[in-house]
Length: 501
Image 1 (cartoon, rainbow, N blue to C red):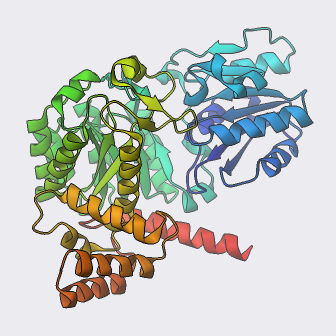
Image 2: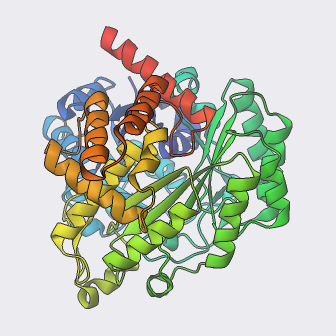
């Protein structure tokens, strides 16, 4: 029995709903009357509704994101059909913008737009007291981070053992990149450093070794970034893994020194490059010093043990097929461990829509609202890039073909074009881009290298054998971090337990 049920549908079991834990921690006197129930998008909505209603709640708070919007809408529709008297409160980035245009918000009783850490408790008090008379959409505003209860005590022992633990030392972003919701989160606000580090100390004592920072700009505040790195370096034990998002062109000597002090595999940096075309970057209000960016990536690759995950976006207004290919090759030459190729998404509320008419931007009307075509790249080209991204993940990013992957673009002027040829060939041969068993994929790659590229059969056979004997191996062309491998191992154990249940 619980008066308040906080729920969401995560993309995977291993993910934990960080935002809901903030709501739970800041319920005050209502905390004892609330429960957190998490699901994933692969569970049936009817069963989710049954689980939620088993608590006999008066209020259901549901977190809605781009990855669960369709499933969440079905859950809300069923909830209101079965128990219309249950008061449904929605929150999250997907419903914080263009609220009046969404079917899910019309079904709900209240939508909290923005950071609902404190506003959720305020609405719940009014509802439980029978005095909620506010507008259906409530603006939360920006809470004072000094006054928030931190959520880390809401991580359970199951979370610590089997899930990624998310943490944040700051909120907001100083940049105005038009494709990103963080461009709306100005200014950057810091949590009190002393209390944050004390919370990290408690998580370490509980056995947490994998910390995923969700800060959009970890290296913006040099004092705070350095203090956090020094805190973890002083407490380093084997298996510690830290994930940060970084501004790629901001890495002064103090941060370089702090990062280089960590053993190999202890840090992963997610580096958002997005485009190497300066005209495109300017068009979407993205400020980036490419000379510094390249120097920083070379330093990280050559002088540290950091695992580098770099992002590029295909389909930005004015980015041609040729300029994207050149940018990909330029990034690959810097040797990041992974290159994530993503299609441009039209996230609700982002100003990227101002380019729609001029550049003929056409997006899918369904989540995740990815680009379908524009004036520079037609639908067929976008589909080719979608398959390219998938096969790049399977072959280059996966770590399963460390020895063989480089043969695909060896002696080629453009690695992008070389891999695109493989991508087109693989799709024609397999007829799909998902559910390709590893031995079959290895066979396809061997056939392509020998029959299509004329590679030496003995050399190809040796590299394929070497890759298959290594197993799943380290992730990425240049290897994965031990921390990521540990998380993958946890996922395999959890799947085995689920299968046996």
